[in-house]
Image (tube, rainbow, N blue to C red):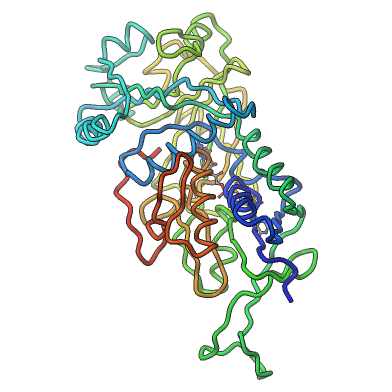
Length: 429
Ligand SMILES: Cc1cc2nc3c(=O)[nH]c(=O)nc-3n(C[C@H](O)[C@H](O)[C@H](O)COP(=O)(O)OP(=O)(O)OC[C@H]3O[C@@H](n4cnc5c(N)ncnc54)[C@H](O)[C@@H]3O)c2cc1C
């Protein structure tokens, strides 16, 4: 006899959303979530820039984000759940070359009702004091900076209070009768044959076997099915039982800069882009360093998703590197936005992207052995978490389609591995 119908390993945003949607779909199920941390959301979830955008070139990515954001908006505006959702918009700056790559997608999205506004370099200079071209600037050349050709402002985008979202899923799951156990690390997935015959060394390759339980630091938990939603730690549990998920960890860092001068305060509270009188989330053209406005703390967050030679490395508590700010980020964003000249960072944090190395889009599938795998948020798991949870719940229930918020149908196998069908994503940060 199993202790639980479903064991969800990982109380990050994806594990919680999945547990909630499984329980909501069938409240009679006994569902337990376990996490090695002392509370929910303390893995990559809390260490995120917590921004969202309904702006992706892949249609499936777009549907995941758009339906999730609609759900969050519904919670905040119709249900009174304060998610600290602020529609300050995204201002994505492009070089001529990168603009050409997204131009056709913009046209396609426009035909479907996608709203955006384009800005010319001179508009950005006037509104933001942004330096859009660097002709003859040797330092800019050394840094490989790209001139701004166009910027696309997306109003259906902004920032969210990620821990408010975590608390929403956690508390709703508990209200439905779900259980959560913290300080419980799964050390091993236990595999047994469906028909044990008592041979030493069971199960053998010719036996039909499946995951029946999880060995944890607080004892063994038997479950009908196990959902593995351990973010960057997915391979740590799946590799030992020979299940490939194509997810790798990579450190990402975010640094804080206080809006201490008048020029920075004016920039932070700019009124020209949205009703919330805030700087949009800005992505610079080349390299794509990003700036997040933090109105609640009168500051900005600055980050960049570096690749080569950044290691794929699983660290329990990744640390921000001061030099990454000083020699990596600062020279770039202060060149584009001279208001930041001399700005020091007041601190920062680091987390792990859980990157799906196939196509940087989520991975959700049920293996033949009693395991559902949910992960590969690839740097945008918060903004897609509701849709991912609904899809994972549909996978758990054996449905062909999931119904996303707003009654959108989503073919669940599109995010699986066997019949995966996702378009290339050109807007990854
Ligand atoms: C710097 C940075 C910036 C980001 N910015 C954004 C952004 O602006 N917008 C956005 O949408 N996304 C962003 N992301 C991505 C987003 O944070 C992730 O996609 C999302 O949090 C992934 O959620 P998860 O539940 O899969 O993983 P996690 O939050 O890491 O949850 C996994 C959980 O599993 C637990 N766990 C692991 N192994 C075990 C085990 N063996 N036993 C028990 N428990 C275990 C961990 O403790 C953890 O709580 C960012 C990420 C980083 C690092």
